Image 1 (spheres, rainbow, N blue to C red):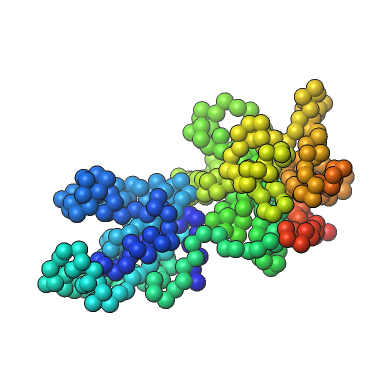
Image 2 (image 1 turned 90 degrees about the vertical axis):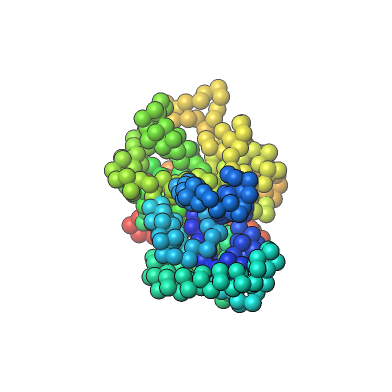
Length: 417
């Protein structure tokens, strides 16, 4: 079994009429698939126009490059029989750090001939075409097996596209803030206990290994092992990236932000391209609120509307502001230390027998433990930010959303408590 990640390049390899397009249509969304026939139809009004193949293939390369650079999946539905046909895709996958999978199609000669005859080709032409293409593929098969990629046969290897179903067992991990060691321990625990991870946001800033944390988050999210909530620190770093890597940024950057930015600025162009593709994969797949059964996961604070939204990539205001920053006292918004004066009135709006899990606000600064707040109706809020990389430690909740069990977990950088 091969799991196709969300940031991947899937290249189909096979002669005409070997079932590639039908296979891809069943497994992938139309926007993921790039094919010469589609592009010929778009550009020239007919899919059998072979007069401008250089233009067509330049457009294929452009689209695949754009998809991978932006953290998406690309599927190339073409014969790709020669090593020279496939080589550009190998380079693109390596450039952006994407998973590369070649899928080999083998179908009986009789079935391929029948398919070509149904398209109006003569038997003699169909036989000649298939014979030539089989010879071309046979001559390049050894090179196909040597490429740095997974090479699978469509007939005997099961490919899983999308997130694996891990059931009701979750591990909701608080603000990581650049603590790669603690993050690794959380991932190892989730794997050992077969739990899907929910990163509650603020993977970056403060700590010493922000880009390693981004890469690990990317690996877990792209493979379907994790869901990521977009925190206010991701939001700010994302704004800095989109402002031409800070050249046009006009906001205020904290020393915590600079811990991540300095790491980004140390990357060479090749490393930066891979980082940006990983970042965009996380951003594309992120949520501001994510719900499973009667459990809601967000970064700062929940609103009643979130229970009706299901899962949302980005929320409109005021829900979006609450999700990013929590609830601030409007009468006295800033504390003496300069930080927002956060309040918890929103806890009273959590429905009975429902649970909200948040990060963002370091509540217990003495013992650095998860804090549970319960309203008069029995609605609960779990605060899982325990000050990691700011003098505290990394915390998580092991949750079963079906039987409602909850256990606190802690990952100290030096010694587990």
